[in-house]
Image (cartoon, rainbow, N blue to C red):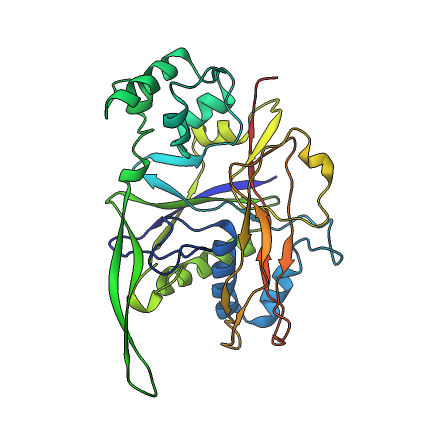
Length: 348
């Protein structure tokens, strides 16, 4: 028996700073990728339970050469925005059934919809698909800021209204010369009733691990996730929920013919069979780590990962990637490519 949970992260009035390759300190993503969440969570887990326990946990995940056939003890999605009871999901990279071939009139507006409310996502990719009413509404959206159709009613066009981006001026002082350096840091502030959520899947029931993970997530909420934690950024309160009937219907779709990632994915070797009929994008993942055990800082090796919304003909479990820097000897450093995907039904 497997268990799925939805976990909401309420940041209150605390801002967040999620860096990414190529955007610099002056900007921030509005959400954290699955590998970022995994690394931060496991670091908090190590602080609570120590090196031996965390190494035993990591040994349960599949890794190239060491244990490629293991079933992971849990799988995480990336974090996505919620606002009230509206949950946004990444739009799959393949068009839904019913989407018109002659889409010139709506293509620009459609491509803006990188994230879809759960109900629209389910209708387009698991239900009746893209309808003539959807096309009419998108055509109208091109001409005016507000429509009165189903897409508007389900907050399809409101993703960008759930948060605000801002740049805060900062000053750093050189410890030797005392010279000052003026710079800006980008933060994201969520609107009231908005925050981040993610899905976690336990393939087998493990109440001990679930209890430990809840404790570690509470600690992470106190410390903060992302950058600029010394400024109070990234602090949250976590709420675990069982899936409601709507989410259960999404996860347990009968007779799917494709799967859409809601996490990052890395696996080595990667069979070419997975790419037959697939649509995907890749993202380079790198960055710095601070060891929770030694306090040592180091730059992780970079890896290429499949991104959320990538579509494959079957679910792929993924693996942990060893990204330990060459001269880092304290312990191994991993980046999670363990994936989570949702079933979809595309036009034949």
